[in-house]
Length: 397
Image (tube, rainbow, N blue to C red; front, top):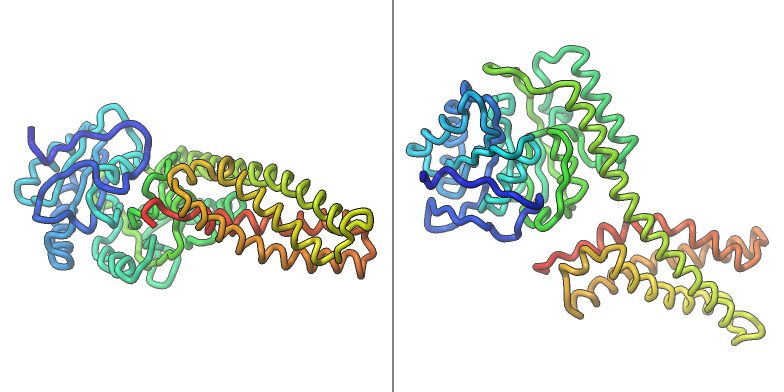
C-alpha cells in the first residue's frame, strides 16, 4: 500500500497533543500541517498542490506537510492526488468512505497531522494561496488563531451577487445575536481559511455542524490571541460551488448547539453559586449578628465570602469544569486553579462589598436582601472570567 495513502481516523473528534501517526518525510516533524478537504475537485487538485508546494518550499522548506482528505469523490480526486505524491513528498492523502462532510474532514486531517500549527484551505483556488505566508507570519508572532478575512482592510469578494452578500452578512449578524462572545471576536466567522495552534484545541471534544468549522474552533479552543489577514475571495474556475441553503441552516444549528453547550455549563456554575450563597449568608449571620460574634459588617462579609469561594471552587472543580480538571490531575494544578479562582473572586468580592454598602447605607435595603442582590450582579462576570482563565490551564503547563 502506498505510504502516502493514510487511513482515515475514527472515533471522537479530538485532536491529540502529540501526533498519533508518524509519516517520515524528513529527519524531524513538520512545523505546519495544511489540510485540504476535497470532494469532486479533480479539475483543481494538481494546480493547487503545485502552487502550495512551491509557496511553502520557499517559505519553510521541509517544515510542512499537505494532507488531502477526500470524501471518496466520484471523479476520483483522491486517486489523482495520490498520483502526485511521487513528485511531492510532503503530500499525503486520506480517502474517507464511511464519513462525509467538510468540517469532519478537516478535523480528521488534523488528527493525523504532525505539525504544531494546523491549517485549512479550500482546494478550489477561491482562497488565494499567497495569503498563507501572512497567516504563518502571524502565528510566528504568537497568535493562537490566524484567520483570512474578507471583511477587513485588504479583503473582499469578487463577483458575489447581492443575495449572497446579504446572506453572508445576515449570517454574521445572526451569529452576533445567538453567540456574541464568540462571533464578536471574528470579523469573518464564516471563513474557511485559517490556521490554529495545536495546543489551543488539543483534547477538546469538537462537534461541528455543517461546513463552517472556524466558529467551533473559536468557541471550544483556548484562544487568547486572534490575528486576521485580509484576502479577496475569488470565483471558482473549475467545478461547482457546494454552497446551498442547507449550509446556512446547518450554520444556525451549529450556533444554537454552541449556545446550549455554553449555557449548560453556566447553569451548573449558577447552581454551585447557590450553594455558595447559602454558605455566605449563614456565615454572614453568624459573624455579624449581635447574637453571634457581632463583628463589623465589612469584616464579616469578607470572611463569609472567602468561605463561599472555597466551597464554590471545590464544587466547580469537581462538577462544572470537571471534564477539564480531570485532565489536569495533581495538587499543584488544583492549587493553581484555586489561586486563579480566588483572584477573580476577589475582584467580584470588591464589587460585592461596594454594592452591599451602597444598597444598605444609601438605598436602605436590609443587609440580607442587599447581599443577595450584590451576589447576583457579579455572578455572570465571575463565570466568564473563570471559564477563560481559571480552567484554561493545559495539561502541559
